Amino acid sequence: MAPLAHLIGPGGAGKTTVGAILASRLNWRFVDMDQCFLSSLGNIADFIERNGYVEYARCNVQLYERLKHDISAPTICAVSSGFMTYPSYVTPVYSSIRDRIETDALTALLLPAFDLESCSNVIVARQLARPYLNANEADELRKIRDRFPVFMRLNCERFRSDGLPEQIAATIEQFIQKSLASTDNQSI
Image (tube, rainbow, N blue to C red; front, side, top):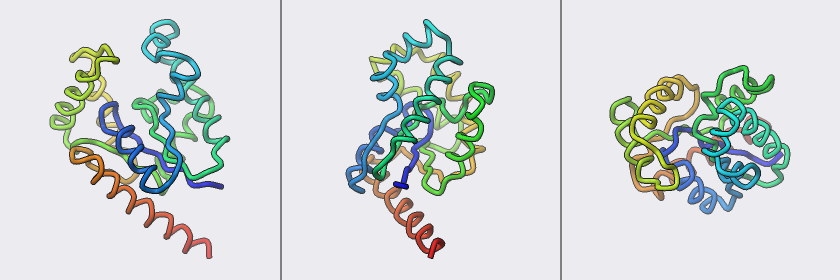
């Protein structure tokens, strides 16, 4: 089975930017779950407004399952910002998928800072700078404040994403190469 590395973290953490650079450095395929959703089901904000957040989460989990099933080449996957924070009842398989992503040796959590205030300030500023989001400060602040503790409890490798994207990608590339080498040595 081809390697699948996950980049997880809040919106504005740099998953898409770093993921594209990382995939290029490794010569792997890059998949952005938000782009997959847009291609399959349309604008995320419109979908949530029409169908509710739980239905969005359910569809996103199904989309992830299809993506994972279709992986045939080494892939970097930028997971949607809320994916690791969905309610456990979203789908019967969600908890096991979430647990597998969290504990996978190739999962990287990106956060601009490891303290709530600094992280919140950076994330909110980045999200507000994205005109396509039509974001407002109060909602973005609430989201990161709600999700930050969940991200910090995850049992996976953490990377600060407040530097140059190329350098962050290089650091994660080293992590992936080391993890793959360790896995190869264990299977011998």
